[in-house]
Length: 309
Ligand code: GLU
Image (cartoon, rainbow, N blue to C red; front, side):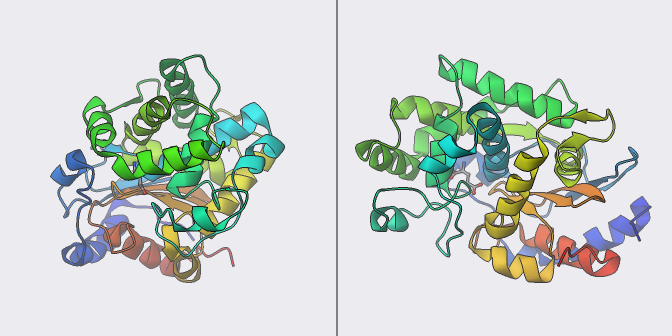
């Protein structure tokens, strides 16, 4: 069973929107604080190219942590599993995404997984290139191939806003550098990382990326393989175990699909073999997930039996 009409989807959006009043827009990155907590847009992309969407589907929003799944796929393709997982682990954590606590407890130092900031910073630093510009352009080229949209870029304003205030991420980088995990200039890592997080797109673009993951790395619209099956599976597994921060367990029970969220209120979902979904709803719950986005996914999961478990 699938959602076929805008009207049907709009009903779910209207129901989920009620929960915006219980959430709060992220403002620790000043530019994100300008978002309207009542916005909620969603797109569902099916393998036959059909798209159903509701809300302001033209609004562009930054990826933030959703970008971590994309940089991971790129770095796995460039360097292979062995090199990457030597430096970053595969285990979920009950700690918040920006926590430094567990880093001190592992010896030798190794971020628990690539979805928390410490792990994502390590992954970003592994993107090959001679300069920050070359590396962000390589990542952008990959995002363009995933979305089929040649116009994707990053928001200078959001990137700068995060770069100027990323005290915690700087601390994580310096800690990792002290322990020899990050080998390069911290400001350069942060330059690439903040631009990566500021890559912006509509919920339609986001749903198209979800579709590629749902179809195990192949874009069904062009029949082109964008990433190897194994890498698509690794990314989806991280989405299930750590994609929704330290609420991933509850999300697996209530929704049951591979998904990755970001503090901009975005959620990328991949319903294996069925469709990709992209959501933007900036009001966040206390864990940093879109409160309306999660509600919407719960409603959709129940109605169309989306759980893979
Ligand atoms: N750029 C954000 C940060 O590093 C991403 C966090 C997120 O979306 O969870 O703080």
